[in-house]
Amino acid sequence: MARMFSLFSHLSLHSIVSNIHISSSTSFSRTFGLLREHFLTLHRQRLPFPTCSLSKRGVYQIPTIYRVKMAEENISGIDKPKKVIVSLCEGFVLGKSRKSYTQRDAILYAIGIGASQDPLDPLDLQYTYENSENFATVPSFASVFPSMDLMFEGLQRCPGLPEFNPMLLLHGEHKLTLHNPIPSEATVNQLATIKNVFDKTSGALVIVKIDSFDESSDALLCSNEASLFLRGIGGFGGTSMVALKSPVMPNRAPEYTFLKKTSANQAIIYRLSGDYNPLHIDPEVASLGGFSFPILHGLCFFGIAAHGAVREVCGNDPKNLYSIEGRFTSPVVPGNTLLVEMWQEDEKLLFKVTNVDTKKACISNGIIHLRNVNRSKL
Image 1 (cartoon, one colour):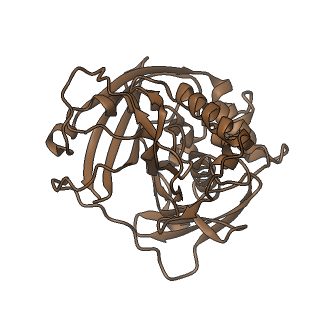
Image 2 (cartoon, rainbow, N blue to C red; image 1 turned 135 degrees about the vertical axis):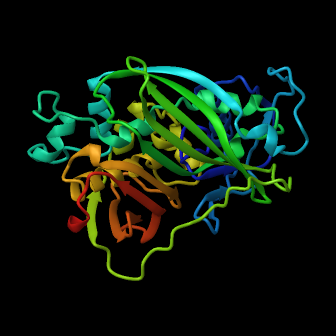
């Protein structure tokens, strides 16, 4: 959960700060800067901060602290509805963006999800050493392609969404589909749209889809789907006709298991792939959020699961991973050990990731689809 305020932080801020005005055009980094400055001022004045509580979905919430009051200006120039209008949301183009990356970025991402913790591991050198004979990108590198600023600004412009508090936005699930191998360096053009909207009573669940195209060939490389929960704008009644289904985990021992100990500085490295939420590096911000330590990015342990599947099931061939998805359910502190369990189920693998230190699942409802893998080996 991570660039969009509570995104991947599993953090919700509730009451009102009347003297902080953040317009819908304010960037995430600027917003975090304003909030950090205000919170730390209150902290130095020794004003009390309530502790976090854990919701049923494993989402950390902070009761009665602060909520950003959005400025009343409307930069989109459109009238915002009082309730969600599904027909005006689905298919709405949030925006387009262009992103270039190099081998260095791909390697930095691989290190950020824990590849080559053992520098002599030949399997991981494939992702961390540019002169490796089979140098390739970890497939989940594509999960950092989307521009979160673009997504947020697009949601603010959507004529079917009412004004919403960005501090109450939560990234609950993520899906990555790989249509073609991810090049080690490329320029990608991206198109972000709203795919579906669901009424969850207490809020709206908005599924945002971001397609990324290789600029040199126009080939569709990948699609990211982020499930964003916008608290406070539910109860609109009209809901997408698409049904939400969760996989049922088998009641048997998994076919594949592996442990991954995260490093103490893993969040500091991973953030260099583009997610600069201070909750993952700034101890004071983490403390104000009710955490003893800065927490790890959700998409980081999402990447750990993807990387492990490629190593354990796909013969270390990244082309064999077609898609991966999962729900973020509890936080991970850098240094925690993760247990990844995978079950063969028909034409897919079901998986979950458990934080060994807390004994809580941090990714549930995991599904992996493979390609070019002999089922007899599964």
